[in-house]
Length: 586
Image (cartoon, rainbow, N blue to C red; front, side):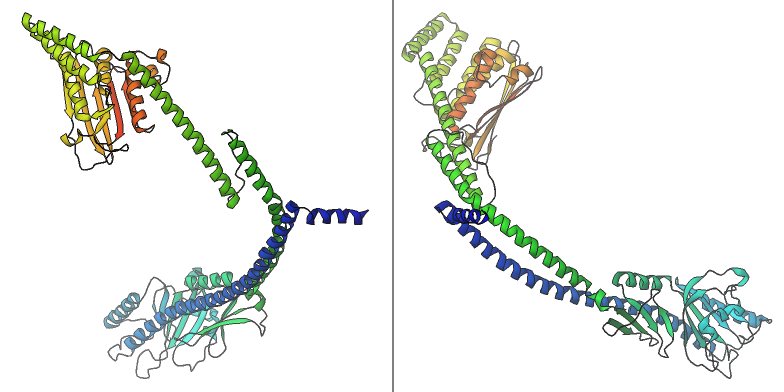
């Protein structure tokens, strides 16, 4: 039974074109993925381990070199201070410095001068500077108990006939008088004075420097590298050793330095196991990652090969639905691979086709509405002009000059509005019709309104849809102004390849609820003013595209601002219009 199931599984894997492709993809994916993966893991481990061991070794060497530099700096300061004091005491003129308490005036002056020198040699790290005479009397700060100096191990064990500098090493400063020991860790230096003819022959210079910062650096080094640190003098005396227990081995990694000032040897020993611990962690992690990667590669290869042909078949079915007219068909994007990019391209293509069809439908609807309006308002212009001219002539005979001027300006306005042979006219022509319209309003209301125009002459040659500004001016007088009183400002400027027209008035403004309904397609939700604004907006969208048209900002009781943006086109150019630059508005 079990063998039969295995044979059925085998037949499923190798039989049929679809399953055969899946099997081939699975095998190829595993071969292509696992071999480079395992090779890369081995090479990465070798290179990483080599680099980390090298960097860690250099880090340890640099850290020990830094300890050497800091220690040399402290020792050098102390040695230079001792040499300055020694030179001072060798001066034959310093005979007043004895090994007892000064009693004469000159001895007191000499003592004060010497202790002033000692104070001048102090730094922020100096813990003490003393000159101790054989009698027990000392020079320096008055806080020293000479009897307690034997508490310093190196002081007590120093050779009696020692000459030169004798480094006492690190110890706690616990030789103050009256129990005022600070227990401050210090680094000490003792310099015996040998000058048979001098008053200080047999005395000792004791210099102590605060070692807190230096010992803190030692501990930081030990914590950071896990190394065991020791400092030894040339005669084998142990100056410093890490507090942790340590058993030296032959395979330990050693970093050592010799101090130039006193030939002390700084040695840091790190067990080989600790040194190669990082590379061992990398090796373990590499093996774990390699095993996990093999498992994931097999699983991903199986899933990928199973879903690969399914995604192609889904794409084919979706394309067939679109061919039947189902433009709302979309594919789920399941990844960012080539098939995922193909799914996104398919969705963008279908969305673009759907948007294009909607725009074509909207354009056709706008054109049809415009044609219906044109047929609705079309009248015989010759009959109208002849009638107006007759009335104008009659008014002239009767002496009614205001009526004659009003008829003249009305005729000029109608002449431009009734000429339906040209949908796009120059901006200058449209502004001239506005001038005639305003003349009619001036005769009607009187000189009670102000009109400011800011437009450069070079901008007047660009095209604008016919009869788009007059409805907006009508709205100002019929809905914004009371008895024609108010101010109107018209500004035209260029913005790269576009024109921007701003029409402002200080009239009654538009209520917020009406402003929200201004561009909605239901005429019954607006008044007469909203219809004029919508018609003007549709003309710009019809001729130049949906991105262009009107933007209205208004506050009830404060006025209205209308912003119109459209591309620059010149008369006589092709359908896209001839773009021009360099014109400035006045």
